[in-house]
Length: 119
Image (cartoon, rainbow, N blue to C red):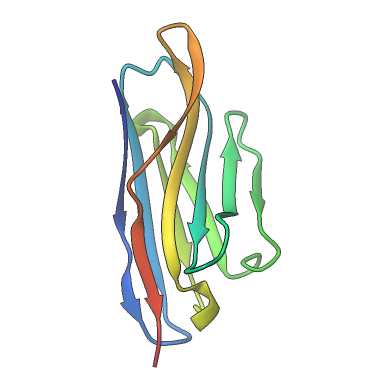
């Protein structure tokens, strides 16, 4: 069993900041990738930011320069600091982890956490 659990999120006014965290736990022997995706109402899920096992980080163009992704390798945890938030950042944010469990590489998803940016 592998669990991916997000925390953080909430509501903030435009220009504000929020932080998200995500921890992968359970029977996972290797983590190749962890990342954040988001899905706004009536839109497809999109990549926000991700980090590979060798530390390479990539961001969606829409958040580059505003969001910061970091990780704690020893805790299998990633963090997303979201600055200068805009109404268009409103979405459910999902954490994704790709790793090896029971000899197989699989994708694991969290339940999602709501981020609302509104005045």
